Image 1: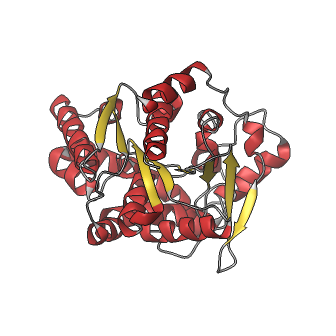
Image 2 (image 1 turned 60 degrees about the vertical axis):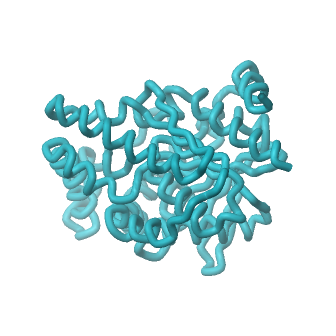
Length: 332
């Protein structure tokens, strides 16, 4: 959804492409890996592969967690240590206090890395909504960030900018999201229960073939009121709260290795009037140009793919991350 939608290097990239590891089987994500305790007692699920530095930290988009990275996690881990985590309320991490703004996510992430004994500075990778978290982390704690890759990232004030450029398409997207919210709100209010005629429409059964215990866990987690509130709070915080947090902390990042990947298919996916599609694509690219310009060596690379670049064009993400890692190592 639009609301949830930012020479050593060459040698390293070629090696990664030639020796890409196969995706991890989903079985690797059927249980938590390392439940890292935070100061308030909550636990965050952390899944690390590989060795070496800098450590790459993967933060997924809206409603996703560490399993979203399964296609590229093992390949990246051939180069350095790569840690994916589940934000509060996602997958195996405990829900967190509201609001779940960008600042709340960054605070959890920093506490998790410290508690896990993972030293920085880090290479941060964020998809979609998580691009906001990467930007805030880099601005607030520049000494802890060695580089970053923003994968078709969401952007501060993007809801307002899309509404101005493409009002019909933006309104349609709001309507789709409102329908999803209405299902969950009925559950929260006690007006929708398992077994009701439209329960399966609001909460489809997990895909067939999963172990029964894991299926049951999925159902329990995605209908947990605290987790639902966490997810909606992340989205609700984006237009104003998270955007204001990023604007307040905004700073230039010097010559930090910094790559933005723009999926050219993101704007096309929402249909609407042709002229609005072009306007949305233009605004999407402009916002990513602005994100890239935070660093003097920042770059906005266009990828012929949909929003989930890591799934359809994984090598584009692998190449960008490995290039940033190589640039960080070259500075030592």
